Image (cartoon, rainbow, N blue to C red):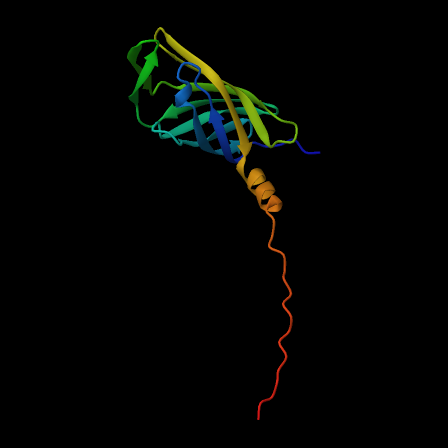
Length: 157
């Protein structure tokens, strides 16, 4: 059996423990050049597009995600009787590390952001998009062929 590669289109999810309502899904496009990988990530939330560079040596994967645009997110959160505005800044590089499953169809691991004296971390998972699309298509029930009775032709004079 050949060693799985990482090149292709991936669909994933990352969790943000400090801001659970900011969890996000993403699509990653990864190319592989020996052990080096590069590509692009599109977060489905307002964080947007990012680049990725790193390495892959089955089953270990490591990469850095860098957002094309920096910014901040303000969230209004209830804490007990108080309403608080939480501000989080995005833009610093995000370090991802993880492992790929033996079949090469899924990956999971942890991510970390460190900027100055601030640090945040969480978990991530991803699956090879083509694989899941194929599985869903195979699981879709096809309409049964219904045979209708043949019409009898009657000559009318």
